[in-house]
Image (cartoon, rainbow, N blue to C red):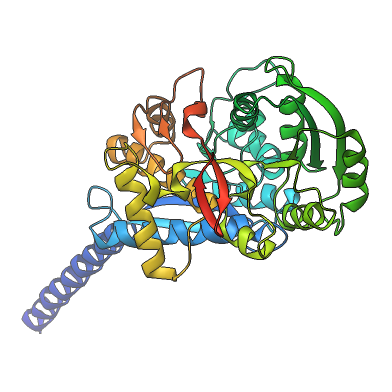
Length: 394
């Protein structure tokens, strides 16, 4: 009897030990499989700024798919968690907070708009999490004292650079009497402020300064007022449908003898299509991502812009926009940092700040402790709308 009991206990212990080993083994396998480099993103995928967020979302999803197909980062898969802000600051704030505190992401890409980006800066700083914005305002990376926020970076060229590019082109044409039109949003207000600030430096006289709301559907009244002042050129600063409406009104009022400049917010071929021929001849500053086919063969951005164009077209059967390029730059800057230092937030932040000579879609990035945008005005090309596409400005 005792021998039977002993034998039973021996067998039972052996089975129990085997099961425990299997369970522990399974746990280790599960942990290994679950290990990812988790990155958050907040884009205006739907709503009034979906023309920004939709290509941004598609771009980061494409990049993650490509990276994981090639083995991830140092053998670790990349996970992207995307939240839709609908261009609402409150929703953007809540999304960023959840990504950081609940999802435990290493970094956040976005938001898509300047207003939303500025709304979430305190969260990035409080939770010490790198945030790489896809919006333009220089205020996103610089506090009221003009110094960079520690944890915040951005990839679009600043509105100040766009204003300088436009003013330089006007100077080259011998034109200095200008009218400003701007949308009453974070992007429009920031651009307008830079146009006003830089006017004297470039010898510009502002003869009219008109505004309109982000939901306005007619700017004829503002344009009629401007027409009475007889400016050499009009500089319009907005994003979304309003900039197309403004173009149509400008054309309908017979004002196309007055040169029209758009901000870099016009950087999508869809805007040209929506203008239905009325945009021919307008000028604007854009990054190289919009014109890979026009770049010289030895241009430093030629390879990355051509590859992005081809990959995006193959996957989505859509043309590129500036806005997807902002997300491409943000994602690759983060992945490069993670590849070098792993999944430590502070080290990722430090590595971003040390980035030099990175060839992106919108320029050659050179970050530093005093510059969390890393671009200068050479990141812009002055272009014009010609034959329903982009061409170098005359």
